[in-house]
Image (tube, rainbow, N blue to C red; front, side, top):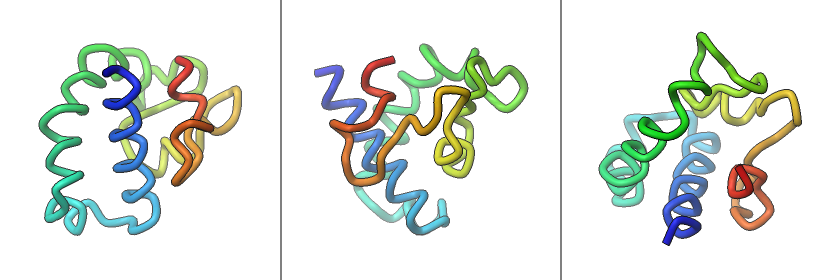
Length: 90
């Protein structure tokens, strides 16, 4: 179940990176699922350390652009390839 949730988040993040538009994503059912199911998990478990102010490991998850940049260890997501994304290992 955990991997499925993260895979959904990665797919949504990939879509955000590809389109660069949060408004377009809001009309997408996957975006609604991200907002309703995945974002609360990230908020509870990740954002306190991986935000624009703290950036633990150089990684911020606050925006698609920050996510695409990655952290001190490099990229954490591979667009369209959730199984290859380092975020699943964190």
